Amino acid sequence: MNEKKEGVIVSGVGGLYTVQTKTGERFPCRAKGNFRHAGSIPLAGDMVTVRCPALAGENYLIEAIHPRRNALIRPPIANLDTLFVTFAAANPDPSMLYLDKLLSIAVYEKIEPAVVITKADLSMEKAVSYAEIYRKAGFPVFICSSSQGTGIAELERYLYGIGGICAFAGASGVGKSTLMNALFPSLSLETGMLSEKISRGRHTTRSVTLYPKSELMRKNAKGYVADTPGFSMLDFIEFDFYTVEDLPHCFPEFETFLRECRYSDCSHTKESDCGIVRAVSRGDIPKERYESYLSIYADLAGKRPWKKK
Ligand SMILES: Nc1nc2c(ncn2[C@@H]2O[C@H](COP(=O)(O)OP(=O)(O)O)[C@@H](O)[C@H]2O)c(=O)[nH]1
Ligand SMILES: [Mg+2]
Ligand SMILES: [Zn+2]
Figure 1 (cartoon, rainbow, N blue to C red):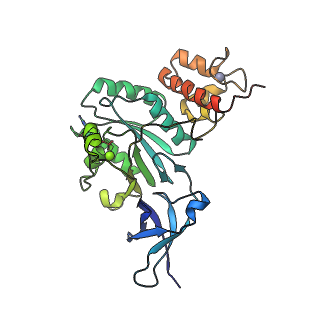
Figure 2: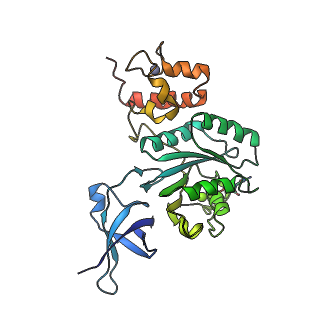
Figure 3: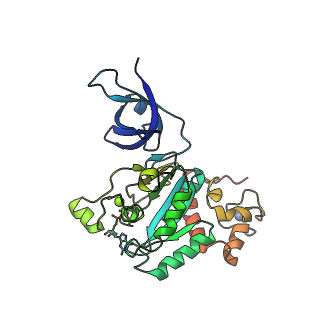
């Protein structure tokens, strides 16, 4: 009889996974061949049952993936508890649509969302104006500069206070890996210039890796933190993240105004007596967020028309 173990996938590259048990034991694993057919390949963050080798030369084998609380395509990770949507105050300038898409997916998946603004040293003014928008929308916001070391301690306290799996996600070059190195001096993740990455193809985070916080922070810190590869697009037409009916509920600051709409099937795009449109014109909902809503709405409504009764 082969011994069985349970653990979490902390990394997976090219079909070779690393699984870590509760006691901190870590071993390389292959996955049973039938996961691909079942439509769910193992992801970093998955809780798995592993069959240990009975004979020398055999592999550890992932036999079962435990039920997931959530799973993201970009970044590819399962069972996330907190998503730090990360962007630079400048260089590169953020696309708010991209950020709002990522935040909306987190809300839909019941992942605690937070906003991290990096490179505040390049433009404190821009950092503050983005922070104002996201604070108004109700998200926790952190303003950091890894090069000047500001905002790092506050983010570290927040990280220490939460458990489960959290990840820094956002476009390539915004400073995710540099920020993690600043937060956790024992880490030395590869970082690099955007131009260097393209021309030499190095310094890029290529896959999701989970780091146990007990190894990065104080011994009693709980859970894992993940560095993730950057991705440039979230295509709501190609992929089904959620439906057009879900959309208003993926913008948390809309919630209290939804009941003020005259029509129960209000799309909040053009109706005359709409609580959301009024809240935007009063300034209770940031207009930048509403613009993202309209853009995502157009994508989703185009896929499957909004049903008017
Ligand atoms: N000015 C400034 N540059 C930064 C800061 N953090 C990161 N960078 C630079 O931004 C580039 C991309 O950083 P990296 O951590 O690799 O980004 P990632 O792709 O999001 O992991 C590197 O050249 C970093 O030196 C910061 O706080 N301020
Ligand atoms: Mg990186
Ligand atoms: Zn409405």
